[in-house]
Image 1 (cartoon, rainbow, N blue to C red):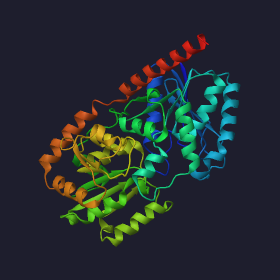
Image 2: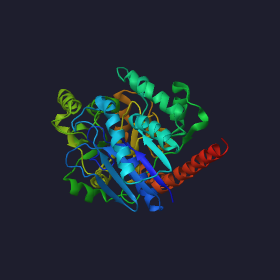
Image 3: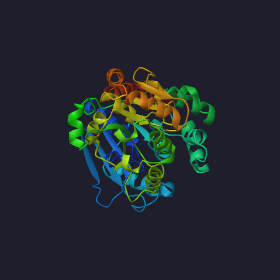
Image 4: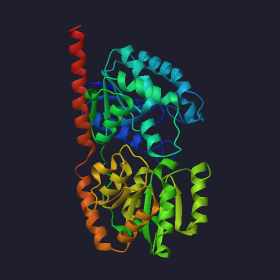
Length: 407
Protein backbone atom coordinates (compact mmCIF):
# COMPACT_ATOMS: atom_id res chain seq x y z
CA UNK A 1 0.00 0.00 0.00
CA UNK A 2 1.22 3.51 -0.85
CA UNK A 3 0.02 6.98 0.03
CA UNK A 4 -0.19 9.10 -3.11
CA UNK A 5 -0.59 12.88 -3.48
CA UNK A 6 -2.36 13.97 -6.66
CA UNK A 7 -2.15 17.71 -7.35
CA UNK A 8 -4.84 19.40 -9.42
CA UNK A 9 -4.42 23.02 -8.38
CA UNK A 10 -6.79 24.69 -10.84
CA UNK A 11 -9.16 21.83 -11.71
CA UNK A 12 -11.26 20.25 -8.99
CA UNK A 13 -12.17 16.65 -9.88
CA UNK A 14 -15.62 16.99 -8.30
CA UNK A 15 -16.47 20.29 -10.02
CA UNK A 16 -19.36 20.51 -12.49
CA UNK A 17 -18.03 19.40 -15.88
CA UNK A 18 -18.32 21.45 -19.05
CA UNK A 19 -18.08 24.85 -17.39
CA UNK A 20 -15.02 27.04 -17.79
CA UNK A 21 -11.76 25.24 -16.91
CA UNK A 22 -13.50 21.91 -16.25
CA UNK A 23 -13.28 19.02 -18.67
CA UNK A 24 -11.35 15.88 -19.45
CA UNK A 25 -8.54 16.56 -16.97
CA UNK A 26 -11.03 16.66 -14.08
CA UNK A 27 -12.41 13.27 -15.13
CA UNK A 28 -8.89 11.88 -15.54
CA UNK A 29 -7.85 12.82 -12.00
CA UNK A 30 -11.14 11.65 -10.48
CA UNK A 31 -11.07 8.25 -12.17
CA UNK A 32 -7.41 7.59 -11.33
CA UNK A 33 -7.94 8.51 -7.68
CA UNK A 34 -10.89 6.16 -7.40
CA UNK A 35 -9.10 3.30 -9.14
CA UNK A 36 -6.00 3.70 -6.96
CA UNK A 37 -8.23 3.68 -3.87
CA UNK A 38 -9.96 0.48 -4.99
CA UNK A 39 -6.56 -1.20 -5.08
CA UNK A 40 -5.91 -0.39 -1.43
CA UNK A 41 -3.79 2.76 -1.83
CA UNK A 42 -4.47 5.97 0.10
CA UNK A 43 -5.01 8.88 -2.28
CA UNK A 44 -5.27 12.60 -1.49
CA UNK A 45 -6.19 14.95 -4.34
CA UNK A 46 -5.23 18.52 -3.48
CA UNK A 47 -7.06 21.33 -5.27
CA UNK A 48 -7.91 24.97 -4.58
CA UNK A 49 -11.27 26.11 -3.22
CA UNK A 50 -13.41 27.49 -6.04
CA UNK A 51 -16.50 28.28 -3.98
CA UNK A 52 -17.13 29.26 -0.34
CA UNK A 53 -19.41 26.22 -0.01
CA UNK A 54 -16.61 23.77 -0.90
CA UNK A 55 -16.08 21.40 2.05
CA UNK A 56 -12.47 20.89 3.08
CA UNK A 57 -12.68 17.16 2.42
CA UNK A 58 -14.80 15.27 -0.12
CA UNK A 59 -14.65 11.49 0.18
CA UNK A 60 -14.40 9.64 -3.13
CA UNK A 61 -14.65 6.20 -1.51
CA UNK A 62 -12.18 3.37 -0.89
CA UNK A 63 -9.31 5.43 0.50
CA UNK A 64 -9.51 8.34 -1.96
CA UNK A 65 -10.50 11.90 -1.12
CA UNK A 66 -10.35 15.48 -2.39
CA UNK A 67 -8.85 18.14 -0.12
CA UNK A 68 -9.79 21.77 -0.86
CA UNK A 69 -7.27 24.44 0.12
CA UNK A 70 -7.58 28.20 0.12
CA UNK A 71 -5.54 29.84 -2.64
CA UNK A 72 -6.62 33.36 -3.53
CA UNK A 73 -10.13 34.79 -3.94
CA UNK A 74 -12.77 32.34 -5.14
CA UNK A 75 -13.45 34.44 -8.24
CA UNK A 76 -9.79 34.74 -9.30
CA UNK A 77 -9.32 34.55 -13.07
CA UNK A 78 -7.27 31.62 -14.35
CA UNK A 79 -4.52 33.90 -15.67
CA UNK A 80 -3.91 35.06 -12.07
CA UNK A 81 -3.73 31.62 -10.49
CA UNK A 82 0.07 31.44 -10.56
CA UNK A 83 0.47 34.25 -8.04
CA UNK A 84 -1.59 32.26 -5.52
CA UNK A 85 0.60 29.15 -5.68
CA UNK A 86 2.59 30.17 -2.55
CA UNK A 87 -0.61 30.35 -0.49
CA UNK A 88 -1.76 26.98 -1.85
CA UNK A 89 1.63 25.44 -1.14
CA UNK A 90 1.74 26.85 2.38
CA UNK A 91 -1.75 25.57 3.19
CA UNK A 92 -0.94 22.17 1.71
CA UNK A 93 2.20 21.80 3.81
CA UNK A 94 0.35 22.95 6.92
CA UNK A 95 -2.38 20.39 6.35
CA UNK A 96 0.15 17.63 5.62
CA UNK A 97 2.10 18.41 8.79
CA UNK A 98 -0.97 18.73 11.01
CA UNK A 99 -2.25 15.34 9.84
CA UNK A 100 1.25 13.78 10.00
CA UNK A 101 0.96 12.54 6.41
CA UNK A 102 3.89 11.03 4.53
CA UNK A 103 3.56 10.47 0.79
CA UNK A 104 5.40 7.98 -1.40
CA UNK A 105 4.88 9.80 -4.72
CA UNK A 106 3.42 13.02 -6.13
CA UNK A 107 1.53 13.15 -9.44
CA UNK A 108 0.76 16.68 -10.59
CA UNK A 109 -1.68 17.62 -13.33
CA UNK A 110 -1.24 20.71 -15.56
CA UNK A 111 1.62 23.18 -15.45
CA UNK A 112 0.38 25.07 -12.39
CA UNK A 113 0.28 21.88 -10.34
CA UNK A 114 3.63 20.93 -11.83
CA UNK A 115 5.20 23.97 -10.23
CA UNK A 116 3.82 22.89 -6.84
CA UNK A 117 4.92 19.30 -7.43
CA UNK A 118 8.50 20.37 -8.20
CA UNK A 119 8.80 22.06 -4.83
CA UNK A 120 7.10 19.29 -2.86
CA UNK A 121 9.12 16.55 -4.55
CA UNK A 122 12.34 18.14 -3.31
CA UNK A 123 10.92 18.96 0.12
CA UNK A 124 9.51 15.47 0.75
CA UNK A 125 12.28 13.62 -1.15
CA UNK A 126 9.80 11.52 -3.15
CA UNK A 127 9.34 11.02 -6.90
CA UNK A 128 7.41 13.69 -8.77
CA UNK A 129 5.43 12.68 -11.86
CA UNK A 130 3.67 15.22 -14.07
CA UNK A 131 0.92 15.02 -16.69
CA UNK A 132 0.44 18.33 -18.53
CA UNK A 133 -2.81 17.48 -20.36
CA UNK A 134 -2.17 20.46 -22.66
CA UNK A 135 1.07 22.17 -23.64
CA UNK A 136 1.38 25.88 -24.41
CA UNK A 137 3.63 25.45 -27.44
CA UNK A 138 1.40 22.75 -28.92
CA UNK A 139 -1.68 24.96 -28.58
CA UNK A 140 0.06 27.96 -30.14
CA UNK A 141 1.22 25.86 -33.08
CA UNK A 142 -2.25 24.39 -33.60
CA UNK A 143 -4.26 27.60 -34.00
CA UNK A 144 -3.27 31.03 -35.28
CA UNK A 145 -4.00 33.66 -32.67
CA UNK A 146 -3.80 31.26 -29.73
CA UNK A 147 -1.86 33.04 -26.99
CA UNK A 148 0.01 31.65 -24.00
CA UNK A 149 2.31 33.42 -21.58
CA UNK A 150 6.08 33.18 -21.52
CA UNK A 151 5.68 32.29 -17.83
CA UNK A 152 3.69 29.17 -18.65
CA UNK A 153 6.22 28.07 -21.27
CA UNK A 154 9.15 28.58 -18.90
CA UNK A 155 7.45 26.66 -16.11
CA UNK A 156 6.49 23.80 -18.44
CA UNK A 157 10.09 23.54 -19.61
CA UNK A 158 11.44 23.49 -16.04
CA UNK A 159 8.85 21.03 -14.78
CA UNK A 160 9.26 18.65 -17.73
CA UNK A 161 13.03 18.52 -17.37
CA UNK A 162 13.03 18.43 -13.57
CA UNK A 163 10.32 15.82 -12.95
CA UNK A 164 11.24 12.20 -12.28
CA UNK A 165 8.69 11.13 -14.87
CA UNK A 166 6.31 12.66 -17.42
CA UNK A 167 3.16 10.74 -18.36
CA UNK A 168 1.40 11.53 -21.63
CA UNK A 169 -1.60 10.03 -23.41
CA UNK A 170 -0.13 9.83 -26.92
CA UNK A 171 3.09 9.32 -28.81
CA UNK A 172 2.57 12.72 -30.48
CA UNK A 173 2.57 14.46 -27.09
CA UNK A 174 5.79 12.66 -26.23
CA UNK A 175 7.39 13.89 -29.45
CA UNK A 176 6.19 17.44 -28.74
CA UNK A 177 7.86 17.34 -25.32
CA UNK A 178 11.10 16.11 -26.88
CA UNK A 179 11.17 18.50 -29.83
CA UNK A 180 9.52 21.62 -28.40
CA UNK A 181 10.64 21.41 -24.76
CA UNK A 182 13.91 19.45 -25.02
CA UNK A 183 12.61 16.88 -22.54
CA UNK A 184 14.72 13.71 -22.33
CA UNK A 185 12.68 11.03 -24.10
CA UNK A 186 13.65 8.37 -21.59
CA UNK A 187 11.62 9.98 -18.81
CA UNK A 188 8.40 10.27 -20.89
CA UNK A 189 5.95 7.36 -20.63
CA UNK A 190 2.91 6.99 -22.93
CA UNK A 191 -0.18 5.73 -21.07
CA UNK A 192 -3.45 6.43 -22.95
CA UNK A 193 -6.44 7.66 -20.94
CA UNK A 194 -9.54 5.54 -20.44
CA UNK A 195 -13.32 5.60 -20.13
CA UNK A 196 -15.77 4.66 -17.38
CA UNK A 197 -17.43 1.64 -18.97
CA UNK A 198 -19.92 1.26 -16.13
CA UNK A 199 -21.33 4.75 -16.74
CA UNK A 200 -20.86 5.10 -20.48
CA UNK A 201 -22.77 2.37 -22.28
CA UNK A 202 -25.50 2.37 -24.93
CA UNK A 203 -29.01 3.39 -23.98
CA UNK A 204 -31.95 2.76 -26.30
CA UNK A 205 -31.93 5.77 -28.63
CA UNK A 206 -35.68 6.39 -28.44
CA UNK A 207 -35.61 6.14 -24.64
CA UNK A 208 -32.66 8.55 -24.49
CA UNK A 209 -34.45 11.02 -26.77
CA UNK A 210 -37.64 10.81 -24.74
CA UNK A 211 -35.58 11.44 -21.62
CA UNK A 212 -34.12 14.60 -23.18
CA UNK A 213 -37.32 15.75 -24.85
CA UNK A 214 -35.94 15.34 -28.37
CA UNK A 215 -38.49 14.27 -30.94
CA UNK A 216 -38.26 13.52 -34.65
CA UNK A 217 -34.91 15.16 -35.36
CA UNK A 218 -31.49 13.94 -36.44
CA UNK A 219 -29.08 14.87 -33.67
CA UNK A 220 -25.48 16.09 -33.91
CA UNK A 221 -23.76 16.41 -30.54
CA UNK A 222 -20.77 18.26 -29.11
CA UNK A 223 -19.72 17.91 -25.45
CA UNK A 224 -16.87 19.86 -23.89
CA UNK A 225 -15.48 23.22 -22.90
CA UNK A 226 -16.53 26.28 -24.86
CA UNK A 227 -13.38 27.95 -26.12
CA UNK A 228 -11.89 28.92 -29.52
CA UNK A 229 -9.38 26.05 -29.57
CA UNK A 230 -12.32 23.61 -29.74
CA UNK A 231 -13.24 24.74 -33.27
CA UNK A 232 -16.95 25.24 -32.61
CA UNK A 233 -17.13 28.10 -35.11
CA UNK A 234 -16.20 25.61 -37.84
CA UNK A 235 -18.85 23.19 -36.56
CA UNK A 236 -21.56 25.84 -36.82
CA UNK A 237 -20.48 26.62 -40.38
CA UNK A 238 -20.56 22.90 -41.19
CA UNK A 239 -24.12 22.57 -39.89
CA UNK A 240 -25.12 25.55 -42.05
CA UNK A 241 -23.84 23.61 -45.10
CA UNK A 242 -25.84 20.43 -44.45
CA UNK A 243 -28.21 19.28 -47.17
CA UNK A 244 -31.07 18.52 -44.77
CA UNK A 245 -30.83 21.29 -42.20
CA UNK A 246 -34.52 21.51 -41.31
CA UNK A 247 -34.56 17.95 -39.98
CA UNK A 248 -31.37 18.29 -37.91
CA UNK A 249 -30.53 19.75 -34.50
CA UNK A 250 -27.07 20.47 -33.09
CA UNK A 251 -26.72 20.08 -29.32
CA UNK A 252 -23.76 21.90 -27.76
CA UNK A 253 -23.26 20.71 -24.19
CA UNK A 254 -20.92 22.81 -22.05
CA UNK A 255 -20.33 26.34 -20.89
CA UNK A 256 -22.35 28.55 -18.59
CA UNK A 257 -25.07 30.54 -20.41
CA UNK A 258 -24.98 34.24 -19.61
CA UNK A 259 -21.51 34.03 -18.07
CA UNK A 260 -19.33 32.99 -21.01
CA UNK A 261 -18.26 35.42 -23.74
CA UNK A 262 -17.28 32.65 -26.16
CA UNK A 263 -20.67 30.99 -25.72
CA UNK A 264 -22.46 34.26 -26.47
CA UNK A 265 -20.23 34.73 -29.52
CA UNK A 266 -21.22 31.29 -30.83
CA UNK A 267 -24.91 32.02 -30.29
CA UNK A 268 -24.54 35.18 -32.35
CA UNK A 269 -22.69 33.27 -35.07
CA UNK A 270 -25.47 30.67 -35.22
CA UNK A 271 -28.05 33.43 -35.71
CA UNK A 272 -25.94 35.07 -38.44
CA UNK A 273 -25.67 31.72 -40.25
CA UNK A 274 -29.44 31.31 -40.14
CA UNK A 275 -29.34 28.20 -37.96
CA UNK A 276 -30.10 29.77 -34.60
CA UNK A 277 -33.30 27.74 -34.26
CA UNK A 278 -31.45 24.48 -34.98
CA UNK A 279 -28.67 24.88 -32.42
CA UNK A 280 -29.37 24.19 -28.74
CA UNK A 281 -26.86 25.38 -26.16
CA UNK A 282 -27.63 23.31 -23.06
CA UNK A 283 -24.90 24.63 -20.79
CA UNK A 284 -23.02 22.17 -18.60
CA UNK A 285 -24.89 19.06 -17.49
CA UNK A 286 -24.10 16.54 -14.72
CA UNK A 287 -21.82 13.76 -15.89
CA UNK A 288 -24.43 11.14 -15.01
CA UNK A 289 -26.68 12.68 -17.68
CA UNK A 290 -24.11 12.49 -20.47
CA UNK A 291 -24.86 8.85 -21.46
CA UNK A 292 -28.37 9.95 -22.43
CA UNK A 293 -26.96 12.72 -24.64
CA UNK A 294 -24.39 10.44 -26.27
CA UNK A 295 -26.98 7.71 -26.88
CA UNK A 296 -29.58 10.14 -28.23
CA UNK A 297 -27.13 11.49 -30.83
CA UNK A 298 -26.80 10.16 -34.36
CA UNK A 299 -23.22 11.41 -34.48
CA UNK A 300 -20.76 13.05 -32.09
CA UNK A 301 -18.47 15.79 -33.42
CA UNK A 302 -15.18 17.08 -32.00
CA UNK A 303 -13.75 19.73 -34.37
CA UNK A 304 -10.84 20.79 -32.13
CA UNK A 305 -7.65 22.44 -33.37
CA UNK A 306 -5.74 20.33 -30.84
CA UNK A 307 -6.58 17.64 -28.28
CA UNK A 308 -4.11 15.95 -25.98
CA UNK A 309 -6.53 13.02 -25.87
CA UNK A 310 -10.21 13.84 -26.49
CA UNK A 311 -12.00 11.99 -23.70
CA UNK A 312 -15.51 13.07 -24.72
CA UNK A 313 -15.08 11.33 -28.07
CA UNK A 314 -14.18 8.07 -26.31
CA UNK A 315 -17.21 8.43 -24.01
CA UNK A 316 -19.44 8.82 -27.07
CA UNK A 317 -17.89 5.73 -28.64
CA UNK A 318 -18.52 3.76 -25.43
CA UNK A 319 -22.21 4.65 -25.86
CA UNK A 320 -22.16 3.27 -29.40
CA UNK A 321 -22.16 6.61 -31.22
CA UNK A 322 -19.89 7.19 -34.25
CA UNK A 323 -17.53 10.16 -34.11
CA UNK A 324 -16.48 12.78 -36.65
CA UNK A 325 -13.38 14.53 -35.32
CA UNK A 326 -10.31 16.49 -36.30
CA UNK A 327 -7.24 14.43 -37.04
CA UNK A 328 -5.25 15.95 -34.17
CA UNK A 329 -3.44 14.82 -31.05
CA UNK A 330 -4.82 11.82 -29.25
CA UNK A 331 -7.97 11.44 -31.32
CA UNK A 332 -6.22 9.47 -34.03
CA UNK A 333 -5.00 6.93 -31.48
CA UNK A 334 -8.46 5.46 -30.84
CA UNK A 335 -10.71 6.70 -33.68
CA UNK A 336 -10.24 4.44 -36.68
CA UNK A 337 -11.05 6.39 -39.82
CA UNK A 338 -13.90 4.74 -41.72
CA UNK A 339 -14.36 2.09 -39.01
CA UNK A 340 -15.46 3.80 -35.78
CA UNK A 341 -16.05 7.24 -37.31
CA UNK A 342 -14.18 9.73 -39.45
CA UNK A 343 -11.07 11.82 -38.94
CA UNK A 344 -10.94 15.14 -40.77
CA UNK A 345 -7.43 16.36 -41.65
CA UNK A 346 -8.56 19.84 -42.70
CA UNK A 347 -9.61 22.52 -40.22
CA UNK A 348 -12.47 23.90 -42.28
CA UNK A 349 -16.24 23.26 -42.31
CA UNK A 350 -16.76 21.65 -45.73
CA UNK A 351 -15.26 18.19 -45.01
CA UNK A 352 -17.10 18.04 -41.70
CA UNK A 353 -20.36 18.79 -43.49
CA UNK A 354 -19.67 16.07 -46.07
CA UNK A 355 -19.12 13.37 -43.45
CA UNK A 356 -22.09 14.52 -41.39
CA UNK A 357 -24.34 14.42 -44.46
CA UNK A 358 -23.13 10.89 -45.21
CA UNK A 359 -23.82 9.59 -41.71
CA UNK A 360 -27.13 11.37 -41.19
CA UNK A 361 -28.48 9.98 -44.47
CA UNK A 362 -27.34 6.41 -43.85
CA UNK A 363 -28.67 4.72 -40.66
CA UNK A 364 -27.07 1.30 -41.42
CA UNK A 365 -23.66 2.99 -41.74
CA UNK A 366 -24.21 4.80 -38.43
CA UNK A 367 -25.11 1.53 -36.73
CA UNK A 368 -22.08 -0.29 -38.14
CA UNK A 369 -19.65 2.44 -37.13
CA UNK A 370 -21.33 2.81 -33.75
CA UNK A 371 -20.96 -0.89 -32.96
CA UNK A 372 -17.27 -0.77 -33.91
CA UNK A 373 -16.84 2.36 -31.78
CA UNK A 374 -18.30 0.57 -28.75
CA UNK A 375 -16.01 -2.42 -29.31
CA UNK A 376 -12.94 -0.17 -29.42
CA UNK A 377 -13.99 1.65 -26.23
CA UNK A 378 -14.31 -1.67 -24.39
CA UNK A 379 -10.53 -2.06 -24.75
CA UNK A 380 -9.86 1.20 -22.86
CA UNK A 381 -11.11 0.97 -19.27
CA UNK A 382 -9.79 3.15 -16.45
CA UNK A 383 -8.94 -0.08 -14.63
CA UNK A 384 -6.31 -0.86 -17.24
CA UNK A 385 -5.01 2.72 -17.18
CA UNK A 386 -4.59 2.56 -13.40
CA UNK A 387 -2.69 -0.74 -13.67
CA UNK A 388 -0.18 0.78 -16.11
CA UNK A 389 0.11 3.93 -14.01
CA UNK A 390 0.80 2.03 -10.79
CA UNK A 391 3.42 -0.08 -12.54
CA UNK A 392 5.18 3.11 -13.59
CA UNK A 393 4.89 4.59 -10.10
CA UNK A 394 6.53 1.44 -8.69
CA UNK A 395 9.32 1.74 -11.20
CA UNK A 396 9.96 5.37 -10.26
CA UNK A 397 9.85 4.68 -6.53
CA UNK A 398 12.29 1.81 -7.02
CA UNK A 399 14.62 4.02 -9.05
CA UNK A 400 14.54 6.66 -6.34
CA UNK A 401 15.27 4.17 -3.57
CA UNK A 402 18.18 2.74 -5.56
CA UNK A 403 19.62 6.18 -6.28
CA UNK A 404 19.39 7.18 -2.60
CA UNK A 405 20.95 3.90 -1.48
CA UNK A 406 23.79 4.31 -3.95
CA UNK A 407 24.50 7.94 -3.13
